[in-house]
Image (cartoon, rainbow, N blue to C red; front, side, top):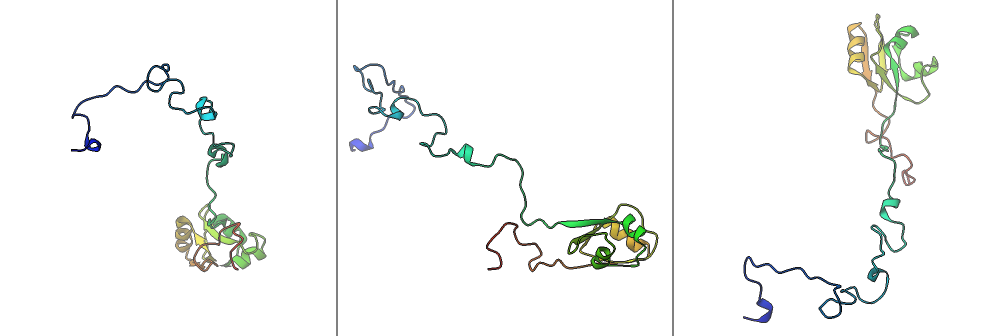
Length: 162
């Protein structure tokens, strides 16, 4: 058996080392902190990073998250389609009648009622709107999204399309 293989007996305990109790014992005077300096004087606040901006100040403070890949639709309700008296409804005809913005992705929503057969072509439909249009004798056609992968490129990404 060698000295480096020695260990206390199983179940034995050893009292913790009390430092800073005078020069007569081990760990007196500087108490294991070395000589002088900031860390010897017990003045380092929690989270202090030596003058660098601390992590708690670097991170964003506002809660929430803005998804850069969100697909934003412009909603059109059934009562608007009923009031427009159009039979063939596309994003272009809605823009021509001043009901939507140019180039907006259109989603038909289920507020209101539709009482006549209309042929609606849009980028999205709510379940209740699609059921109401087909129940009135109309047809529903979903347009594909204008993005290659099914979602828009990240907003604010300056390295896209290079």
